Image (cartoon, rainbow, N blue to C red; front, side, top):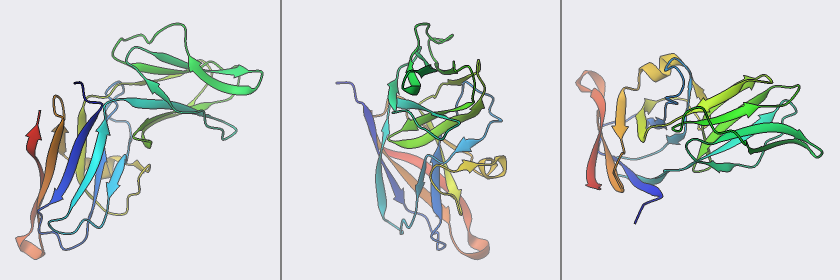
Amino acid sequence: MVTENIQLRLVNHSDDANNSSIVIFQQNVAEDFGELAIAWKVIKNLGRLDYHPFKYPLKFQVSASDSYGNYTPQMTAYDGQAYEMVKDTSGDILRLAKTPATSPNEVELRNNLTMGSINANIYREGKLLAAKTNLAPGQKGVFQFHPTIYIGVVSQIEEGQVMDSAIISQINTEINLFGIQSADIVMSGGGPGKNSTPFDFQLANINA
């Protein structure tokens, strides 16, 4: 049976005494890695030896917001599809485009309005995962994600917030979820004073 969600648990085996927050995000590989990332999930108040279960859905959703602050419903996107924002008699709507995406591995969201910019928003598990903002008429956002998450310890970051390159550069743990049905992500390291070690995240109890 093909799984629709990868079941994960973040387990705190660290020596952290600062009640640090853990951020999880993805990179849109269809764009340059220089682009900003969004905090998809922020886990807070995870005490030592506690665990936090969460899901990684394999499918993601697309939505668009226009210059009037309106948001379209979220629609499940499949590789190779393209969506377009057009003006209908009722207003701006997002619909499946007749012409597919340029690449069969990517999803496109096109601004086919005659005027007004839009934002292309990507969601996973109902939480904002990535965005391409201020797309002028005729422009498009292109999205592709590998089954890979980035995880690290941060301070003062909220879910859905854009992270700048300084924060992203501190997060160097990449976890490949390809072929996994469930697993634990075990956090270790940390600790007080000069004896502290860098935080480390490793997969354990993998069920493929």
